[in-house]
Image (cartoon, rainbow, N blue to C red; front, side, top):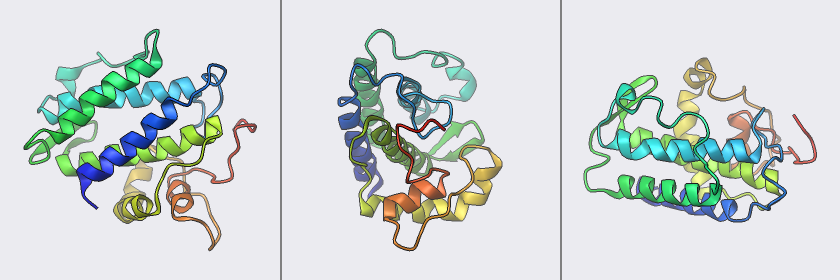
Length: 195
């Protein structure tokens, strides 16, 4: 898959879910341990705020703590819309994916960063869909692509504590369920159950 296309698709699908969040769902639990719907969106908005800086060559120290804490403000949906639009523009800027970017573990290829951001949008989109009772958003094509990219790195990723240990799924599991289970989610998670 083309990275820019995959990133845009994952972002559009996450955007659609954000706009479906009901007024009574902001404090609902999500499959992300300890995160409510509001917490999950705050994380995603923060990630999008970082993207233009990192793709423009900024270091972690240069960005500092400006995107720590609550970045949603009084209008979470607008905060998401503004931050995601800026991130999308940054990823589509000519030459944006040609170099390296600074991340918490050091320097990585900008394309790898793009796939990490796409994974974050897709998997957290799944989390958000589960939390608000919407259809899961990950296409089979994207699930297969992300799985093939993540699987070789899974052991190393576990060492950083980014994801919970993989969850076992049956042979009949969908591609999306296999992806999220590989990243520590229980595909059977239900919003009525607090974990």
